[in-house]
Image (cartoon, rainbow, N blue to C red; front, top):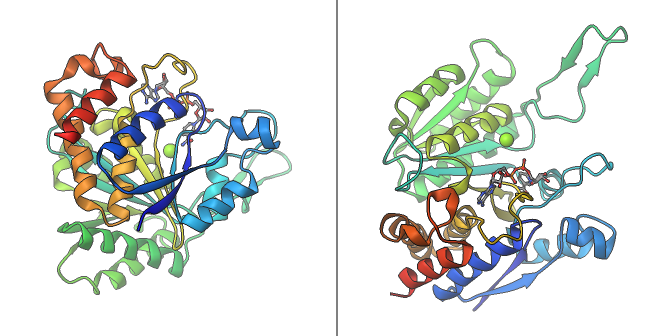
Length: 337
Ligand code: NAI
Ligand code: MG
């Protein structure tokens, strides 16, 4: 039976990279039905809100969404759309694979690691922030819960098991932030006992930064709290050559939203030179999530092949002289073969 997914084309380059992505998905015969819904600036014009209720309802019904980058207007009192979606669906796991591809500006080959970031608690709380009356002292709190830590660590281990990974590295600062980071680490040790075939490695966050830069190949799956995960996942994107190839998924117990990590790139919107790969890799992760693991692998393989053998067709950010359409044409050709 065909699986229906909610598709949010997004703003700026969103519609261009979504078109390229859906062309590749169609060439793979994934038997997906796309239901298009508005969000972002397009929704604001039509519905007067950035995230219309019918879009939320569709995501809830279909449980899986592929989403282009959305522009949140600045200084007009709108709160970030991504934060709204994360809160609404309790998308507690932010999953960011970092994979080496040929022809990028990376100094490394063979990086294949996944950062699993806790997405709902930690240091990123709206509440618990205060400034003293004299403006002298600011206080921010960190909230870590046993249940919140448990579900993110379990997610990381389940992912490791499903993908045949050997090791999960829990990144923390429990030596200094003894209560919150300590609780996270304690829960990580408890959960790890349920996965005897997978090694739990513990690493303090500052050391993890150095180790990632010196020897990223030693990592497999990293699990960590919100703030550390935010920073480390961007570091990992940098290790494999930047945002052009960085997908991200936001996973909850009911709903999963797959997207590119980059934004709507208004500076190049409409020029048809946007690189579709990050959204395509997000689509590959979506296929994995839907159980179509071979098709997901086929997307990654086709990107690898085109970057290796058909460089004139790729977009300028990857050093090519092509555009979004020629890149998609080349990918479709490889996938169809
Ligand atoms: P950005 O990621 O849109 O752009 C940064 C730079 O990278 C620009 O020079 C852009 O041209 C380039 N770039 C980004 N994606 C590219 C691609 N696929 N191919 C080629 N070049 C690409 O970040 P920026 O400028 O900070 O944000 C622009 C808008 O995007 C803002 O409104 C922001 O709120 C939104 N945004 C949305 C996100 C989402 O929906 N997940 C994430 C980040 C930003
Ligand atoms: Mg970030």
